[in-house]
Length: 117
Length: 111
Image 1 (cartoon, rainbow over the protein chains, first blue to last red):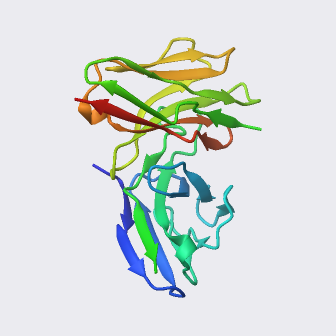
Image 2: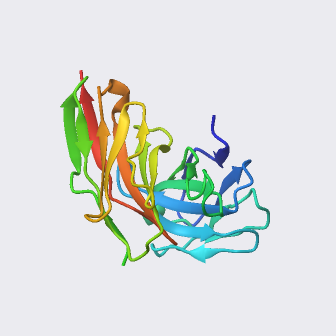
């Protein structure tokens, strides 16, 4: 049973539209991440957060933005979608601490598959 | 720089056989964690197995086990008695202060 939820699961939109991909987790995890992944391909980290009011850019340059106003919520926004944004977006979370049984273990959401026409 | 290398982009084995997926990594940290994640087709990524670098004993989870060679910076995954449901992308990951994933190995279990 997933404790991290992503909506929408599938989205088809036109170029220039603004979209927000939602991600919520119920585990109280401090760290949250957004990855971009073309189907069956490698993961690219685009944003992450250590906690409320913390956001960092990942390794892959992205035109998206994120916010972390609440611990459980980490939405990703594209102000003006383009066909190059067509991809799958995976949200994940993990505990912050070291040495605990769950430390650094990522729990992933089911993904949001975005198609921009 | 921290790197994770999976040298086998794709593999196929017959059901019930044993298969080993390779992973090598590089990190300058002494304290780190290693993971294998599984991503079945069109399904959610899930944790398969984890290994703390300070532990000498190889981790085991049912049919899944690892061969952790710290000096060689190698972390291979062995799947015994493979099943059709093991068909998936498998990602190796190294976590020190960052999480780095390998590019993945696509594993096909053939009936």
